[in-house]
Image (tube, rainbow, N blue to C red; front, side, top):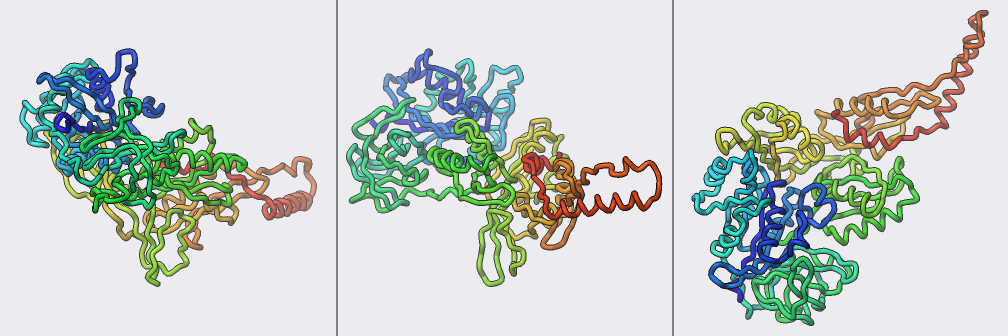
Length: 598
């Protein structure tokens, strides 16, 4: 039985046809009928369909009768392509013995193609190179084949040419999967070891784990435990994954399926954890497990303060389906009560905000995103700062460390100069240049994560006319000269506008914010001072002038003292107003920070 199983995943850059190729495989193996088929079948979330990207992993079991007359079980584990979900990709890859490396025939090798390929090679997977979209007028299959051969050292006969849209070459690919990818190696007699490569939340059944059995067998009614959790759980249901869950009595080594324990707590089932028996289980977990740590934080506040409880409920429900989401309550003098939310990256942040608006009908204000900082004090303590207002510059700080990334930028050779200029502006440290061929190049840089989390990718696409692709991995923390920049309105600090920024950029950034806020804040009946400050030192200021009534309109002439008296009276009134008046900060002010460079 095990010899007839093939577990594989599809790795590719965004928009290289991964989900469309999965559709054709489902169609050719008869897993779905023509009537059930739709575009990007595995991308069942509305956002996935709309954006054309894979956000969540999916697994599906297909049966295929090969040319040798045998029927094979093909387990396809679909993976997200975006850098924010690298950990999820690595766990999906760990559940496979082979991978289809899909490359667009018109675009060639891109940044995430490389990073996911190296991830697959690190797990010793058999790689089948697939050149997709050969039906496009701009396709250059021979040119792309040369790039792949130079990259992984394969020969022409190992490359499969397909068009996922028309179905050309997909039947040959199925045969290739059976001949090239080895069957799983596990043994049924050994103690149970099953890898959780994904999980989801079913509102009726609780947390559902997607598992790959490495060793042993699992049956309904077994008592199990997770290596990295204390809870003992009962197996309520197991089975395989078509597009729906199909119940089975048992699963054996090498098989991929689902596991329901009835737990309503999504924290009990973590991606990357190992399932074993509660008694006489395996001694060691499978390697590679790690707690997912958020890299980007932002404040999320309801537009109306009465919606706080609704926002709390929405985040709780969203966390059940997105285990990597982290949030804690926080309050702000300007925005009231809300939450500090942690994300894996910028795309993850965008997806969470859009899901809050669409699925839960929440109108929220988002503060400027920032990364986590390690602050070392002279007392020897280390504080982790996720919110700029928590950085106390009055303490004896020895050093502040910020996260850095190793980035790969793939671009056309004519854009190298412009990209290097942009990288320099973002405190990038040049590492190396590698040529893929005579027209395409890989630039390797080290960046502070805070410099690329916002609009770096947009600017990169703009200066390269859409051709550059960007990928990164976390490279650890390094000490840099970071300071806290405060924004004051009428002498009062607005905590939601505080930022942690490099000292060299602080003056320029403070000046820009003051100028931008002057355009946005409506005029009051009194002068409103907008100031940017480092500690207690003001570095920039602009003033929103008061609305003034022309009190001299009734004076046709006469003595100047009469005019002075009226102006002095107005001046006193403005001074009194300034003492008791408060400035309402419109929501556009927070959006303006996000567009500070425009």
